[in-house]
Length: 132
Image 1: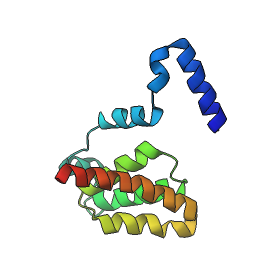
Image 2 (image 1 turned 45 degrees about the vertical axis):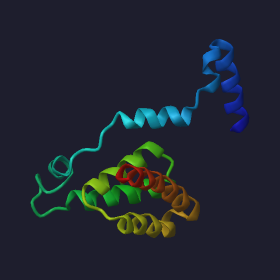
Image 3 (image 1 turned 60 degrees about the vertical axis):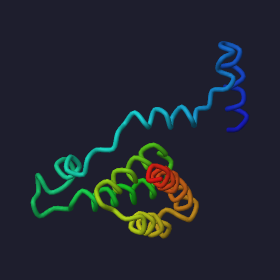
């Protein structure tokens, strides 16, 4: 995989020298920043109890989504980070996010759990930076 990435970067440089310093990871983070976090009220309307008054609230639904993304091997980086951001906005605490991910280690394995925790930590670090 690393060899394929290197080869693709070399080819991109040959086509356009300004792509030499292009970082796909940084580009995705920039793209990800274009998608704002929905306000808690909008999430509750779309994902919460609006349709089903006795149903799950938005926070619980987002924690379940986080569990599902972890069980898939935490391969969808952007989706996982967005889900963590939305869960925080919906009222989830850091401990609840960490517990949700670590619980999935039983079903998804330790590597998936570690990857999901790594991605969640990126969001939590960004959130901490915003607060300072």
